[in-house]
Image (cartoon, rainbow, N blue to C red; front, side, top):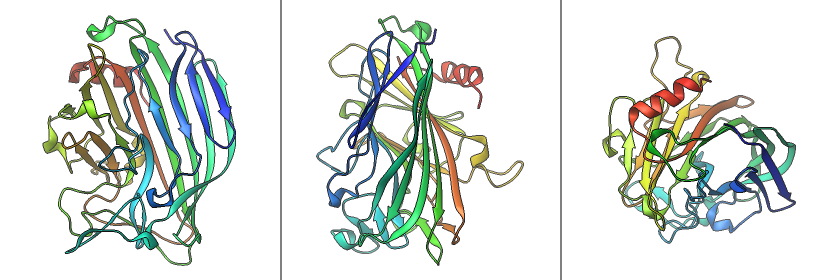
Length: 318
């Protein structure tokens, strides 16, 4: 059963999407600029399950620039649109404020909610630390497939799942290529984070990582069409599961080719997932070209196993 959605827009600050039948604020999309050191950019926090459990973290003590779910660029032609210190091979992480850029909100082309779907379409400018305009982004965030259910052994009121689809089209406006990289492309092992990045709540440390053919933190750096992270909740008896999924068109290597992205995933010292598009190798975007990516995140109450995840994805094809 799918419930209607409502949007509340606080101009200059955030957009909140509420599932009306249960009165649950599923997401707040915050576009208010924050500290320059944290590479200002829009983000989603809090993100909640239908049982009203928060499944994102915000400005944790270890990485103040980790904010819920956000699009990032840890290494971009010498700039850091990730936030905080910048990784430099042989010197570890250095405080280099002149490298910390931003993704600035320009305006919304659509903010709508009809029935069981909410849509936010935003225009952004990706900028060098000095304010120089480097790229345009057209971003589309959709909330849909809101389903209250007791399936999967979940019995609590409000239990069920909902899905967020995040689409980004990033166009290079420089006269030279944009080089998307990561700490791993710059020499640090198993640190290929960049792109869409989720930081889980502190209670999710040591959670369960599942893929189509494997399990555990050893899935770091592997390729697969989806990856799930399940954690136990503080404050209530229960679990939540997030399922991250690539869109079919993200695979630009042709029929039978491997997906170009690799999963960045950690369960210690914190919970995090990113479908990195520059894990092992840089992604080079020529002047005027556009990098388009689409992802889905299903937010579910309960500890979903592989069979439950596979069934859900089959029931909700792209």
